[in-house]
Length: 477
Image 1 (cartoon, rainbow, N blue to C red):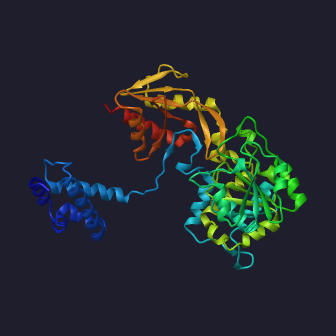
Image 2 (cartoon, helix red, strand yellow; image 1 turned 180 degrees about the vertical axis):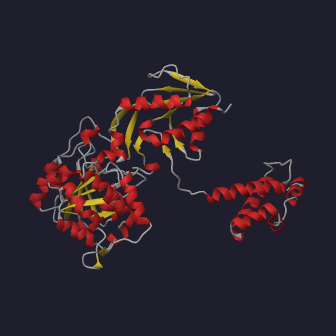
Image 3 (cartoon, rainbow, N blue to C red; image 1 turned 90 degrees about the horizontal axis):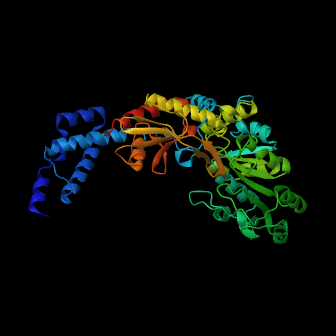
């Protein structure tokens, strides 16, 4: 280490001396002494490493630099790591952004339950211990037509628990074309294996016939599993048996038919233009013994996995020792129950996911015009292709598509009119990063070197925040 660097390092005051600086001492009053001391040590260690690498130089007082860094570190430490964000990507069910935003009724219910005691496992009619899963079972059965229902913490847990109970130590027959990866590296073959069941693949990637299932059945067959390939499609020279064909085989052989329905659509998918998504009610009416699906995708509720089906099998799943490991808490039940009630009462349009998917593209065009006018009064043409310039930015209305997201309906594209944003001095990547770093992060997407703000996934209440950010961005030279 050079003498010059050693000389710089000697200029760093000791921790005790730094703690005696009045401004830093004041921080120990606002926070604990140990919290400030630990943060200070980290700041000093980082500064020392920078000096040793000769990557920084300071013209001013080192103590002042340390104080500035310490204040920033304490400020950052006090900020919640989990923060609200504005989803301007146009991806409705955005897994990275928390999937489905909840309905107002669900939020109210969760807030009320969160701060108080509740009858989570208490039977008010008898004054004795009750069952937590009773809170949603009746609604789920009413909506789906199933005999019984149970809720776990996500759909992967639902599939795992079902197979562990129904097919442990036995074979599960599944088409090779349905051996999907469901995101995050979780794969159906691995879920089956960890459940204690034995995977029995049939058919080929693109073609599986009912005869393939029939030929695979033997004395150790415990279940037939059908998995909806949510996040991809195989087209062209393809074939697979219908759910009705599988259920007929199931009933004929006495082997349960289990369907991983995936997204959990509880309204007719065609009302949202989703012609290739399974409808939970149809699966139950067709006779599936067990159907599992997510609560936070097309259903629009909190994260959960829902298992519905024949009472005898659901009762077995409910008694499985692993059920306790996969059960959900009071907040999930509160949010899910409120969401399900909206369906029962015919108010599903109040569920954000349903509303966004049904959004009329003309309404999106009008909202885009309004937001641009709020930022730049000089808009010359509010039609598609028109542009407005204010300060350093140019705003125009483009034509693009939104997507469902969350592994649902990968081929479905929703016509949209996003705001196209260009900055005179900085690149699209830099603009995207700048918006992402705002107090309320605004998450966008980039197409053709332009930042797109798709209002399909931005609430009207959030428009003013987006407008304010764009005004600030226009002032950057």
